[in-house]
Image (cartoon, rainbow, N blue to C red; front, side, top):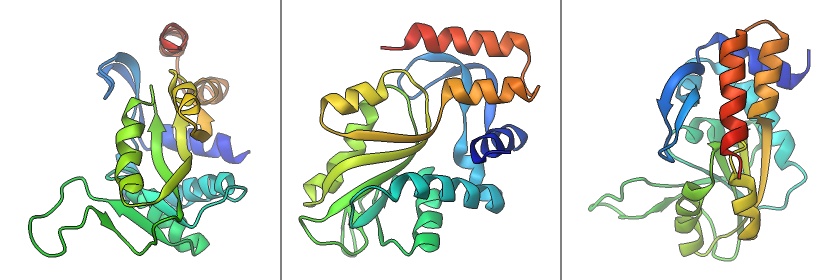
Length: 200
Protein backbone atom coordinates (compact mmCIF):
# COMPACT_ATOMS: atom_id res chain seq x y z
CA UNK A 1 0.00 0.00 0.00
CA UNK A 2 1.32 3.45 -0.93
CA UNK A 3 1.72 6.22 1.65
CA UNK A 4 -1.15 8.14 0.02
CA UNK A 5 -3.47 5.12 0.17
CA UNK A 6 -2.52 4.47 3.77
CA UNK A 7 -3.18 8.09 4.79
CA UNK A 8 -6.49 8.29 2.88
CA UNK A 9 -7.83 5.09 4.47
CA UNK A 10 -6.63 6.09 7.95
CA UNK A 11 -8.29 9.53 7.65
CA UNK A 12 -11.56 7.82 6.80
CA UNK A 13 -11.15 5.32 9.64
CA UNK A 14 -10.63 8.00 12.33
CA UNK A 15 -13.61 10.04 11.11
CA UNK A 16 -11.62 12.92 9.63
CA UNK A 17 -13.58 12.71 6.36
CA UNK A 18 -17.29 13.42 6.70
CA UNK A 19 -20.13 13.43 4.18
CA UNK A 20 -23.33 15.50 4.50
CA UNK A 21 -23.82 19.26 4.18
CA UNK A 22 -21.17 21.53 5.65
CA UNK A 23 -20.38 25.24 5.47
CA UNK A 24 -16.69 25.79 4.75
CA UNK A 25 -14.55 28.68 6.01
CA UNK A 26 -14.92 30.19 2.53
CA UNK A 27 -18.71 30.25 3.00
CA UNK A 28 -19.32 27.51 0.41
CA UNK A 29 -21.72 24.66 1.19
CA UNK A 30 -19.94 21.36 0.67
CA UNK A 31 -21.05 17.69 0.65
CA UNK A 32 -17.63 16.69 2.04
CA UNK A 33 -15.78 18.02 5.08
CA UNK A 34 -12.24 17.19 6.14
CA UNK A 35 -11.66 17.68 9.87
CA UNK A 36 -7.98 17.23 10.70
CA UNK A 37 -8.36 18.44 14.29
CA UNK A 38 -8.80 14.80 15.30
CA UNK A 39 -5.17 14.02 14.39
CA UNK A 40 -3.92 14.98 17.86
CA UNK A 41 -5.60 11.82 19.18
CA UNK A 42 -3.92 9.51 16.65
CA UNK A 43 -0.13 9.81 17.03
CA UNK A 44 0.68 7.05 14.54
CA UNK A 45 -1.36 8.76 11.80
CA UNK A 46 -0.01 12.19 12.77
CA UNK A 47 3.53 10.82 12.40
CA UNK A 48 2.72 9.30 8.99
CA UNK A 49 1.23 12.59 7.77
CA UNK A 50 4.21 14.56 9.11
CA UNK A 51 6.57 12.23 7.20
CA UNK A 52 4.62 12.63 3.94
CA UNK A 53 4.58 16.43 4.28
CA UNK A 54 8.29 16.52 5.21
CA UNK A 55 9.06 14.51 2.06
CA UNK A 56 7.39 17.26 0.00
CA UNK A 57 9.39 19.91 1.85
CA UNK A 58 12.82 18.31 1.45
CA UNK A 59 13.41 19.77 -2.01
CA UNK A 60 12.47 23.31 -0.94
CA UNK A 61 14.63 26.11 0.45
CA UNK A 62 13.71 27.47 3.88
CA UNK A 63 15.23 28.32 7.27
CA UNK A 64 12.25 27.67 9.54
CA UNK A 65 8.89 25.96 9.25
CA UNK A 66 5.81 27.97 10.22
CA UNK A 67 2.91 26.11 11.83
CA UNK A 68 -0.57 27.60 11.48
CA UNK A 69 -2.89 27.54 14.54
CA UNK A 70 -4.69 25.56 15.40
CA UNK A 71 -5.05 22.43 13.29
CA UNK A 72 -1.63 22.53 11.62
CA UNK A 73 0.37 23.24 14.80
CA UNK A 74 0.56 19.57 15.88
CA UNK A 75 1.51 18.57 12.31
CA UNK A 76 4.24 21.23 12.14
CA UNK A 77 5.50 20.23 15.60
CA UNK A 78 5.70 16.56 14.52
CA UNK A 79 7.64 17.58 11.40
CA UNK A 80 9.96 19.83 13.43
CA UNK A 81 10.81 17.07 15.92
CA UNK A 82 11.30 14.34 13.31
CA UNK A 83 13.39 16.45 10.91
CA UNK A 84 15.13 18.73 13.46
CA UNK A 85 13.81 21.77 11.59
CA UNK A 86 13.30 24.94 13.69
CA UNK A 87 9.70 26.08 13.95
CA UNK A 88 7.89 29.37 14.50
CA UNK A 89 4.20 30.13 14.73
CA UNK A 90 1.90 33.14 14.71
CA UNK A 91 -0.51 33.61 17.57
CA UNK A 92 -4.19 33.85 16.72
CA UNK A 93 -4.66 36.18 19.67
CA UNK A 94 -1.89 38.51 20.80
CA UNK A 95 -1.74 38.77 24.59
CA UNK A 96 -1.69 42.21 26.21
CA UNK A 97 0.93 41.12 28.74
CA UNK A 98 4.36 39.47 28.71
CA UNK A 99 6.26 39.93 25.45
CA UNK A 100 3.05 40.78 23.50
CA UNK A 101 4.65 39.08 20.49
CA UNK A 102 2.58 38.00 17.52
CA UNK A 103 5.22 35.49 16.37
CA UNK A 104 6.68 32.86 18.69
CA UNK A 105 10.00 31.12 18.10
CA UNK A 106 13.51 32.19 17.13
CA UNK A 107 14.17 33.66 13.69
CA UNK A 108 15.97 36.50 11.94
CA UNK A 109 14.52 39.00 9.49
CA UNK A 110 15.40 37.96 5.96
CA UNK A 111 15.09 34.23 6.66
CA UNK A 112 12.62 32.10 4.70
CA UNK A 113 9.64 30.42 6.34
CA UNK A 114 7.93 27.35 4.91
CA UNK A 115 4.20 27.50 5.74
CA UNK A 116 2.73 24.23 7.04
CA UNK A 117 -1.07 24.07 6.95
CA UNK A 118 -3.71 21.35 7.01
CA UNK A 119 -5.62 22.05 3.80
CA UNK A 120 -6.51 24.67 1.22
CA UNK A 121 -9.83 25.50 -0.45
CA UNK A 122 -9.97 28.79 -2.37
CA UNK A 123 -6.69 30.16 -1.02
CA UNK A 124 -8.09 33.44 0.29
CA UNK A 125 -7.36 32.73 3.96
CA UNK A 126 -3.77 31.77 3.17
CA UNK A 127 -2.87 35.43 2.57
CA UNK A 128 -4.01 36.23 6.13
CA UNK A 129 -1.92 33.26 7.26
CA UNK A 130 1.22 34.50 5.49
CA UNK A 131 0.88 38.16 6.52
CA UNK A 132 2.20 38.04 10.13
CA UNK A 133 5.33 36.19 9.05
CA UNK A 134 6.06 38.71 6.32
CA UNK A 135 5.34 41.60 8.68
CA UNK A 136 7.99 40.16 11.01
CA UNK A 137 10.55 40.16 8.17
CA UNK A 138 10.35 36.53 7.08
CA UNK A 139 10.15 35.62 3.40
CA UNK A 140 7.51 33.13 2.24
CA UNK A 141 7.45 31.38 -1.11
CA UNK A 142 6.20 27.84 -0.44
CA UNK A 143 3.19 26.37 1.35
CA UNK A 144 2.83 22.66 2.16
CA UNK A 145 -0.62 21.22 2.96
CA UNK A 146 -1.97 17.73 3.48
CA UNK A 147 -5.08 18.18 1.30
CA UNK A 148 -5.78 20.50 -1.63
CA UNK A 149 -9.56 20.74 -2.03
CA UNK A 150 -8.83 21.74 -5.66
CA UNK A 151 -11.18 24.71 -5.62
CA UNK A 152 -8.81 27.34 -7.00
CA UNK A 153 -6.40 27.77 -4.09
CA UNK A 154 -3.24 26.70 -5.92
CA UNK A 155 -4.00 29.01 -8.86
CA UNK A 156 -4.72 32.04 -6.64
CA UNK A 157 -1.49 31.49 -4.68
CA UNK A 158 0.52 31.03 -7.89
CA UNK A 159 -0.80 34.34 -9.24
CA UNK A 160 0.64 36.04 -6.12
CA UNK A 161 3.99 34.29 -6.46
CA UNK A 162 3.51 31.48 -3.93
CA UNK A 163 3.89 27.76 -4.64
CA UNK A 164 1.53 25.16 -3.20
CA UNK A 165 2.64 21.59 -2.48
CA UNK A 166 0.03 19.05 -1.35
CA UNK A 167 0.23 15.41 -0.31
CA UNK A 168 -3.27 14.67 -1.65
CA UNK A 169 -5.71 16.37 -3.98
CA UNK A 170 -9.34 15.87 -2.96
CA UNK A 171 -10.19 14.04 -6.22
CA UNK A 172 -7.33 11.62 -5.61
CA UNK A 173 -8.50 11.17 -2.00
CA UNK A 174 -12.03 10.37 -3.17
CA UNK A 175 -10.73 7.93 -5.81
CA UNK A 176 -8.57 6.11 -3.25
CA UNK A 177 -11.53 5.73 -0.87
CA UNK A 178 -13.84 4.60 -3.69
CA UNK A 179 -11.38 2.00 -4.98
CA UNK A 180 -11.04 0.62 -1.44
CA UNK A 181 -14.84 0.42 -1.08
CA UNK A 182 -14.87 2.95 1.75
CA UNK A 183 -17.47 5.36 0.32
CA UNK A 184 -20.73 4.71 -1.46
CA UNK A 185 -21.56 5.82 -4.98
CA UNK A 186 -23.88 8.65 -3.90
CA UNK A 187 -21.37 10.38 -1.62
CA UNK A 188 -18.61 9.86 -4.18
CA UNK A 189 -20.70 11.32 -7.02
CA UNK A 190 -21.98 14.28 -4.96
CA UNK A 191 -18.48 15.21 -3.79
CA UNK A 192 -16.99 14.86 -7.28
CA UNK A 193 -19.73 17.02 -8.83
CA UNK A 194 -19.31 19.70 -6.18
CA UNK A 195 -15.53 19.85 -6.69
CA UNK A 196 -15.96 20.02 -10.49
CA UNK A 197 -18.51 22.85 -10.25
CA UNK A 198 -16.51 24.90 -7.75
CA UNK A 199 -13.15 24.70 -9.54
CA UNK A 200 -11.87 28.09 -10.71
